Length: 450
Image 1 (tube, rainbow, N blue to C red):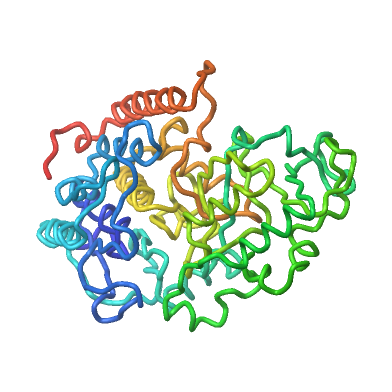
Image 2 (tube, rainbow, N blue to C red):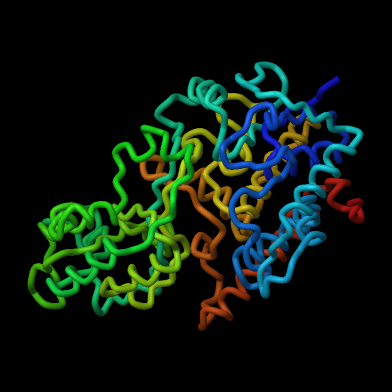
């Protein structure tokens, strides 16, 4: 008898299936490959990595390194598989793709409590407890059913992500707070404005127009709705030297208090989290390659020393408006035995996808066992990520990856970025260990079995 259905054999789905199976539940894991391909995968193996082979930095004072360490405390199968198939990559946890996928496939396929079903799921199971972890390339039929359940306006089929910077890295001796025509709720202004004179603007526009972009894959280029209502900033730059000055960089209604003049053009940054530690660059969705993108964005006055926690990107994706639809436990608000995990929740990055799949599975297991839900402490990376994607402003919601900018402040101020990150990491691991102990979950308290 099937206790739980997990849809999707990627990172989140395989982690979720493993965690449930290890707690004694019978799991049917549905994966449509190889019967139906995605356009990005090249094999039928579970846990196949389709982009980078790196799970990010493994250094303990980096955001992804901390997330990996939290996942180790939570007995993550996939982090163990990654470490067992690691290749030399300096401070990063990079893997041999084939070995990694093979290890994941073997572990899942040989588990006595998991049945792998190679079929496309076209509709959400009505009665059986379910975790949807179908990732960014959810099949059209299932996406349509998810849209029916959630409401079409809360389901997105492509990403147009603007860059995000830490507020402390913005040079406020050049930039300034303010709204157009002084409109807004904050007396100082709701936006941070980076002013450009004519020469700075023309050099910036030329750099955008000349930049090398990431080539779209065939199935993205063929999608007629991929760029609908969302033009990359480099494409605007190519339409003419004044296009951006009359578009997202228009200076109308902006006055620079440093010079007592109106700038020739302006780049506006909007607060991205409640703590005010992150700001996104308004209207700057882009497909420029990341290394060159960072260099170009640092041409913006006030951002010359910017710390980008996320760069802009555009690619086909499927994700739901999690702040409207999900609890921080990854539970669907309108159906108690339905959970979501992975990139479809709006969490970016391999380790983040694993984490949300794991979080969803723990909470579904607890629900089925009559136990209370588990919300990881917000001081942990898993807790802060799950809180961010379920508490962000719904109308401006964009996917987010692990970063220290979404953490609550430390109780005591710590000088120096490196020391501060170390303090964040130490607090997170301490709080995660205490939270796990309080869960009284036998599987998490036992020695590793994989």
